Length: 193
Image 1: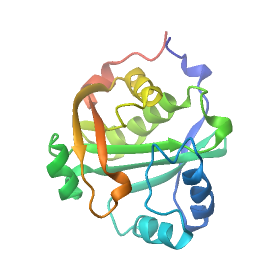
Image 2: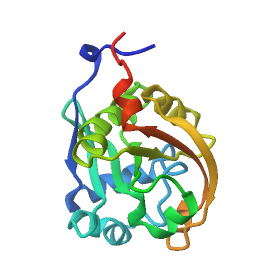
Image 3: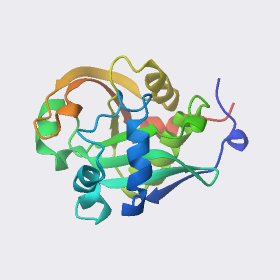
């Protein structure tokens, strides 16, 4: 089923700030989020260390709080994969591809079909908009069927499955179901039924 644009909630992205770390901590500790979005520690000092350079703008990564109808609902980030050489070497995708990671943190916002709406908005505004990327990559765990369905609804297709080893952040080690979408494929899709 395809959604009509007039049925879609208002999705905005607010730059991640230090004041968001307590809510990020709560979301990362949620039993529905923790197994899918690894973090080595949810201690506030550890989160400051992990997200601080993003908050201060010291990396080209873009980190946001997802807002749905004006309420904070989750976390999303996008980044040029080549800026992370170890990950780029392991995942081996198109040069200049932009990776996306996200989770819906607020329990009341889960299982409402927002995942695809959020991804479409980030692709339109950020990845294929501001960043002018030609290729977007999203790589959920192979068993995360709910996320995979949402990404397929947007137009992502399976590219390959890879095993990633993250020595700096062991919580991010594991298999990834790499999905790919080009700007042209995204622009050619009709989201109105």
